[in-house]
Length: 410
Ligand code: AMP
Ligand code: MG
Image (cartoon, rainbow, N blue to C red; front, side):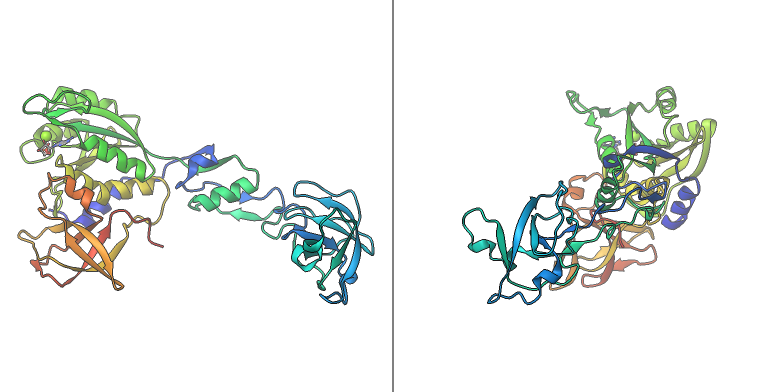
């Protein structure tokens, strides 16, 4: 039976980076930029004031102080968004609001609090300057953020809110990114009933489609829900053919010992079986192959197994397709508070609650680790990893924990 690493390497060897698409910037959060971005403009476009105050010639403020105001004639007021038609000549000042372009003739800004404006009640035509300012004081220079023609973002950059903001500051509404993978999701099992239907005796609700689809969305893919296939060749083949325009097909169920025959036969006829069974717990019956050239991950049907195997194999596949480089799940070291027995030399992923106490992480198992106990996944925020060559872990040992809800490591 192959190891988790070998299985992941196999899966990723069948996965390529997808092509690019042009999208509205707000749709691109979490995608990878597929073009170099050069700035067509300077940001800010003009010298402007960083503070509310008075645009002045710094020479006119020489010798100004609280006890020795220098009085200047106020010739205009300019707000952000407007350009003053006036020029600041010796002995004059223009009242100016944050972001407004610096008027001609001015070389610095005196903040309101360094003038006598707070003491003035009525409208006024002159202002007392109470402190000297140097040339350039409180002026934001044109292009100080981005110079016109410069490269701002490089191809391969992950688009986060800050990149979206920078694109907007250049006036870009659309951008080229590596497209999101379409992930076809098919649940298999005669026992499955879709949500919103009455539950007949002997049946269970199809939860895997929904947990898997939510994971697909979380990691940036587009789920294409194909519904439920019965455990028969005809039903499976019909549904599988609906997946042929997707980038990857994820099935759940139908891969455990007895069931696998049907899926295996179909894979053998219509594609290729790359591996079946991985030395891990939960998730041992995982299958991987291709169907008509499309990668196919056959996740085990048990609801916890399908989520854990998704995190380990489908997530990196999706991230790789999106052009991302960091495929590893964030992992920390914690002191485990319960013993774990590893009876059959598999890699164990035990659901746990991780807490930080006095600067140290502690991991406590969620309780029974049956792979059908899906609520344990709602309690857990991490998976304690016990390697296959460790027969047991004692309470108090240091363990690796894969964090379920953390963003990428830096
Ligand atoms: P299988 O891998 O098909 O043998 O399924 C293993 C277990 O997971 C069985 O108890 C199934 O009833 C259950 N199961 C399979 N598919 C789903 C599903 N889509 N939603 C919830 N439970 C499932
Ligand atoms: Mg089944």
